Length: 298
Image 1 (cartoon, one colour):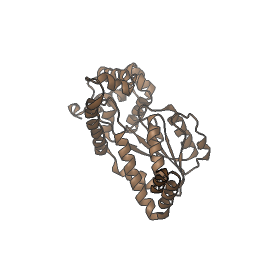
Image 2 (cartoon, rainbow, N blue to C red; image 1 turned 90 degrees about the vertical axis):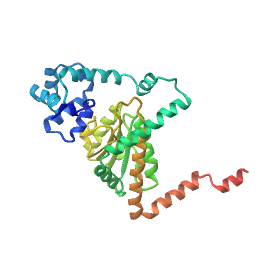
Image 3 (cartoon, rainbow, N blue to C red; image 1 turned 120 degrees about the horizontal axis):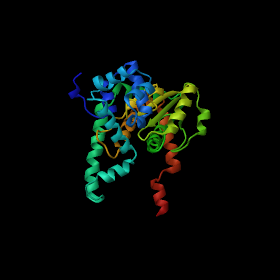
Image 4 (cartoon, rainbow, N blue to C red; image 1 turned 30 degrees about the horizontal axis):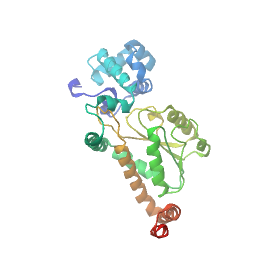
């Protein structure tokens, strides 16, 4: 392999491989679950803890991923660890040359958001996107949505939209629940759509493990090929972030979830055309601000 053609950090290089051997997957899986250790462990310890030989580790890092030597790999990991210790908001604030506010912020953030959408679209696995849309359209199967921290906002958006389209849609907990009581109702063969993005939540991992034990079909939307929940997912869709990002916009995630919802709506409308009409009528009656209400106010 031509090392000069390889660029980006560790997990960008892994994504570029597209396919991993069993040994390589074992290494990458351990790397993802023990990212902080990569900054300090020596080559021998790293090989032993990930369960592969020293020769296999060297071959993967140098000959497959294209690092010049182990020192370059470890230096990169130390810098990445320092970045992770700082919140995304603080990274953005510290990287900004200009004072925040007004037109300057708008001029920086809007182009970045457009770049994030384009990047995610360029790397999107259309086959996986279609498979997930088809799965979510199976209205006879209960669907649970879950996310923590900022991922909760995305899961909540999808939940709100999907409620108009198909029955049996439920939120699994809230932004911080370590034990959502709704899990008592999840059954074998149900579907769980999990959104998990950096910073990854330990709660999401714990709950996903239990869902896997129950026999739930797990659909994962995440931001890298190998993340803490990847090994549990039945289907995974990666929303690729732009390189060298300091503040991670939700724009691309929102666009992809909306497109997925539209796909589901099109399929469900064919099988149950009355559901959305009935749902909209009920919502309008209870929450709509109609012209007749305006007349009463006036």
